Length: 242
Image (cartoon, rainbow, N blue to C red; front, side):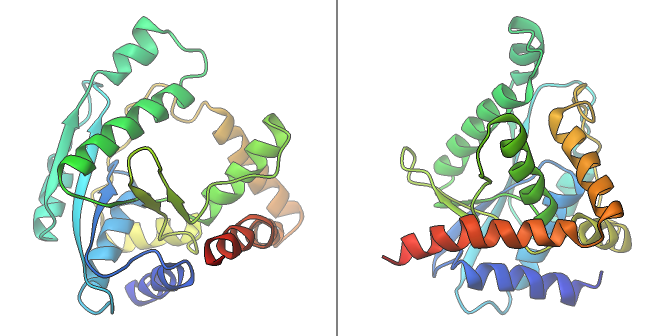
């Protein structure tokens, strides 16, 4: 996918859900994966002409795995002129050591988000950008249906009352295939996740399930996303307008 198309889809999401206002300082949650690197690259390019001026920084929460090498990510941020922070934690010791979680993702995500929010606030940020794309939204919807019995997914814009931060998801209109193509074409310095649970989670199972459904019923993924927009996103947006 070409940069122009990526910027067009990102800008459409920003505009549709009014994700950015004048003077926002946005922290990009940068894991080092293809999604978050694409998000940072796109937002930095958009800054040059987006009608609402905003500033950026990038934050990586280091979970404490010994085999995480972020040197290429740091160089990437320097080339983009984006300030970069690494938050060192021992979350891996808590999740896999002290707690020995059999389903570690929930606790890990909670601790990781807490560390990210704290650093974002200390840097004067009022918003955090997550790199969730269309496939993530559909997979979260099916996870909720299968394991919680409810029609639910994350929202394009989420206000965190406890911290005062607002979470935005500018990649919402990009498919995972788009991100993969753009990342490969651009040569982004993708860092493989060192987590031992990577690829062995309920989300990975649902990802494979969606692929199978889409092979057997072409277009089903897009229809699921349309249902999600009509059932959750549009209703939430109407509530924000009241």
